[in-house]
Image 1 (cartoon, rainbow, N blue to C red):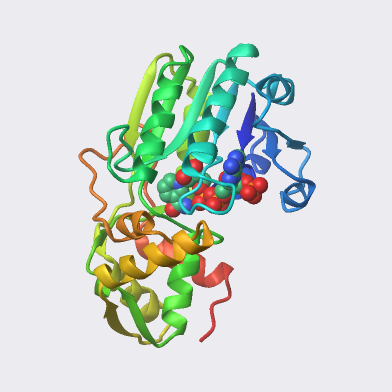
Image 2: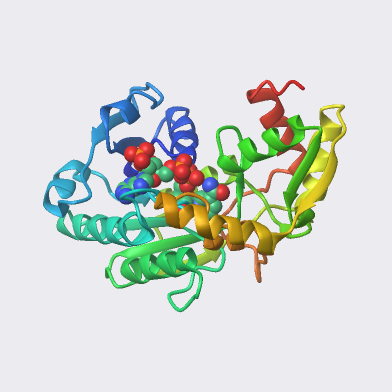
Length: 300
Ligand SMILES: NC(=O)c1ccc[n+]([C@@H]2O[C@H](COP(=O)([O-])OP(=O)(O)OC[C@H]3O[C@@H](n4cnc5c(N)ncnc54)[C@H](OP(=O)(O)O)[C@@H]3O)[C@@H](O)[C@H]2O)c1
């Protein structure tokens, strides 16, 4: 089967493409926005890089034609100049859905986030909820996978962890007392590939988290100890960080905002984990952390 991937150069996209390159039965149209991004994609006979334009659904349809399933990954947590939640998370989804309708796509897989809700006060969660609604209204069979923070080589979550442990004496938001449920990005890729192959009819929303809920400060300690290192964790008051982020994000037109801090420091809760329904076995957290240490050659 052939799948089309938007945001193929994202951390999730690169991981998914690595899995696809190792399969014998799946090929991918790897959609990116620039040649520079295309140059970062894994090279494989199964992968066809494609420069795509979200501003024009008709052109996007031509780019995605031939795939039976589109995996929509393009999206942001941190806004920048000219990239807002509305444009990156909602408008881009609308274009992908329009294009998918034009080419008679069988299935849409959309990676959303825990807590996505069109009525949320948090603008990021609202934009993901709005995007889910656009997918739901498509009339195309769709699978929404809401995830917590993703861990694995190349993810923003892993980068932050490595930076924190390298500091030796780290100051983290709220002392890292919020609960996280990190999901191994390899597990997400397996869930996406399995779902694409099954191509279920209808509309499904799943929450998929990692096997061990744990406060962030404990994850930092666990990561450090797996490296044979130690780290002292201090706290930055969340209210102070939000005050500063409010000023700097307004002045610079993007970056870490109070909404982003609320996401980072919010407890990640899952009512019913979908690993069984999605047919995957979750990777133990220690194995995920060891993969990060190995791949990023973390050295203190
Ligand atoms: N990473 C996590 O912990 C996490 C957690 C929950 C959900 N998710 C979701 O999973 C998906 C992949 O996440 P990721 O962390 O792998 O992403 P990422 O590495 O940050 O990459 C973001 C992708 O979105 C594209 N993009 C940015 N602005 C865009 C715009 N205005 N229009 C169209 N495309 C745009 C980027 O393209 P350019 O390179 O061209 O800018 C890039 O391909 C996202 O939808 C994210 O919300 C991620």
